[in-house]
Image 1 (cartoon, one colour):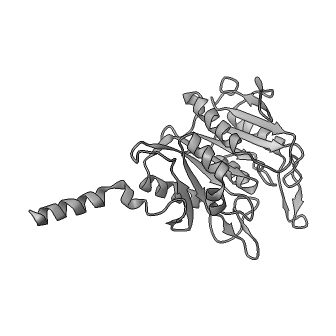
Image 2: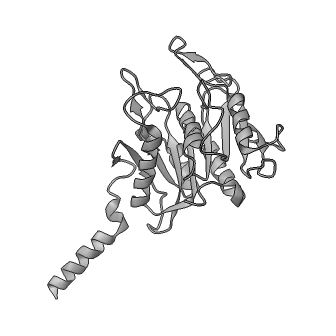
Image 3: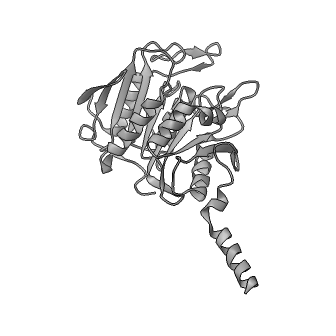
Length: 286
């Protein structure tokens, strides 16, 4: 009887999803080519599938910084989401950043890396695959733009802040139409709306409006938006799913500030994602 009980206990431990969750907000989760941190919302029952906010830190930042940001953690908790923060990789002699076309550096394909992160997240936590939002700040926002362009299939929508394509900007995206909500400060001097040259001209940030025009073309949207709204500090223009042949949706939200992010903007973006009509969301077939 004692032996049978031990066997049953071991079987239960092996089958328990929590046994895979040995990492989290304070201990990194390792994948083949990097690591990430994750925090489920407080009070989660351990079983209900979780929506996900995948957030890319900015230049010289870290995934631990994201986890340590109380406002960001509260934002994810307020919407009941699993907050996932991948760790960037340092270029030679530089700080942590993200590698993508127009700003690639050796060592890792970050698009492939994010696929590995999502695979591992789904092994460790039950995930609502229809509600995965990718966001990021500054160069992390740019990473979200390139993820939308190159590998959007596992995401419902994208919500970058203060970062877009880099020059030379792509004119087409193999991933096809996406729903994207971009936030930017009109007085941003770090990543100006029109972009700027870096490293003595070796790199150049792209023009946000040019990038948005590319998305309008890919999404089959009309030239002018069909909705204009104000959300706190943000003045937003939206090309709704009824205004875009693809059924996707684009929103550009501007504020008068500089290079900054507010956690409430992530909450707004999450609610925007949830409000998209079924045909406006990606990740439906995954």
